[in-house]
Length: 218
Image (cartoon, rainbow, N blue to C red):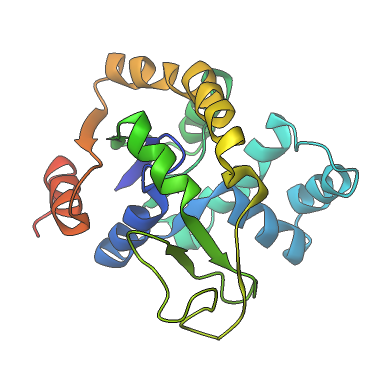
């Protein structure tokens, strides 16, 4: 299976992608993780990407596509994959289609996690992450608080909040999503690939709905 997850910041894509990855034994591919992996490995796309990252500028689409091409053509992805956070706009979606076509492949399902904006804001603003990058455990002051305030349950490191998880920046992030990424919903609807899943409520119920949408037996 070759699955793509769509959803606004705070919709829970990462959590559900990880669960589905474990269930299906398929690699969970996020653009951020792939960038770090490619740079560390020194792959051709990684070397290019590092040049942009070192300058503090966004990695351009052609380099991102090259990086995904390296990964998707690897043995690790021969039985499928789960994409998280890419593509982010129509141009990237069209480039991904061309890449998959060159690999004689295609997406099988696109899951859109739908969550109300007020809940997204609450989820994002209450999110805290372990400062130890090797751990990077995620907590929430309301939904998943740590046992000891300000301390990671796993490694004991201090918890911190991402700069762009502050309330004043969340609205801008959601607006950017609506403008750039939400048009992908119509794009994949026209391709008859889109399945919308309500991303609110119990995480297990959401996961079961995702399994039904991908026609995977629970």
